[in-house]
Amino acid sequence: MRQVERSIFDLRRGLPVLVRDAQDSTRSATLIAPLEGMNDEALARLTEHAGNECTLVLTKHRLELLGIEVDDDAACLPITRDDSAASVIDWACARHPASGPNRATRAVGPDETAALTLMRRGLLIPSAITVPIAPERMAAIEARVEDGSLLSLNTGTIADYEQTSPRFLRRISAADVPLAESEQSRFVLFREADGMREHIAIVIGDPEQWADAVPVRLHSACLTGDLFGSLRCDCGEQLRSSVAKIAENGGGVLLYLAQEGRGIGLANKLRAYTLQDEGLDTVDADHVLGFGDDERSYNVALEMLAQLEIRRIELLTNNPSKIEAMSRGGVTVVQRSGVYGRVTTQNHRYLTAKATRAGHWLDHVLGTAADNN
Ligand SMILES: Nc1nc2c(ncn2[C@@H]2O[C@H](COP(=O)(O)OP(=O)(O)OP(=O)(O)O)[C@@H](O)[C@H]2O)c(=O)[nH]1
Ligand SMILES: [Zn+2]
Image (cartoon, rainbow, N blue to C red; front, side):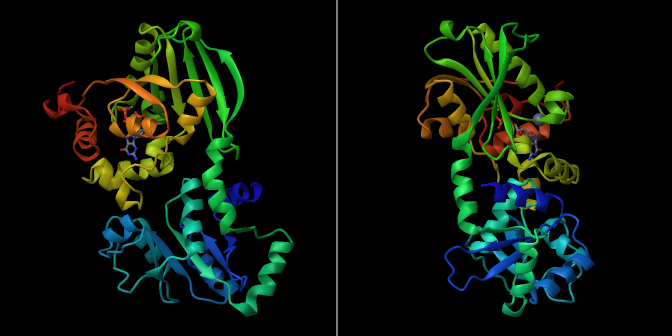
């Protein structure tokens, strides 16, 4: 697995990596590169090293914004030598690209699908520049792989990695951390197999005394709201009131999940905030960046609950998809309790979108005025 993690780090540093389709007997290979930091020189270098024209891989949501309908989850836009890096970046993430790509797309292959998986896992913009290696350039590329200046990995490894990573969650350390809302609290830290993400179970009260249906809150990280009390969302107040409520109900667990920005990462959440300031709602802003409605998977949460031997829960949430994910994963949700923050001038639009676009149980928000704070 080490090669996948190393590749993600190279992509996050703006470096290309080589991807090969394990099923392809011709041993063809594709260079993939992230959009972030792309410039004309880097684009020209990719074309030159590979001896081929580049393509831009975009998700369905992003293609829709460009007025291109596709049936698959993603497609490739050919890039010509006349296209500047600035236009390519525009097509990948600008709200109003200066000019449309005006060209036909082609279907993604395994290499391009793998490229998007790596970008998402690396919390980068979910698009990639890809270029297949021409046969006459293969020897030079292989030499770079040999000397360690280019990382190479195959698509099968990436697919396996996606499937297995959450299953190898390791319990790393634990300590008592008395909290303002619950003095008897213990932080238990879990680390994903690749070492990139850590999640914390906050064990509240004495597990021996817990109710049959353990009060549980699945809380996705929100640095701006949880730590700084941002008024754009309700996360900080939900976090604190959940701890208090779990303590009042005899103890339980709050899982603090490394899923900043509904799984898109802080860099992309800040990009999405800028788009929301231009008038988009929280779901459409993520679509403009190429993401789906919600990029979270709750497999890590299921694994943490399994390791804590919790199978029946009272779930503190307003989000129907969390209940669905728990039930699908074999955890019985005996009861649901709502958990609310204040409705403020600044978060009213966000909460309204959660109710109307994502079906969250926030009826009280729909009935309130924007300045009800
Ligand atoms: N992409 C994106 N993420 C946001 C935005 N505002 C808040 N978030 C993230 O949304 C997530 C909210 O997570 P939670 O509070 O666990 O859950 P929820 O889906 O709102 O559901 P509840 O359990 O009802 O609170 C956090 O990861 C925040 O960082 C936004 O405008 N865009
Ligand atoms: Zn928040």
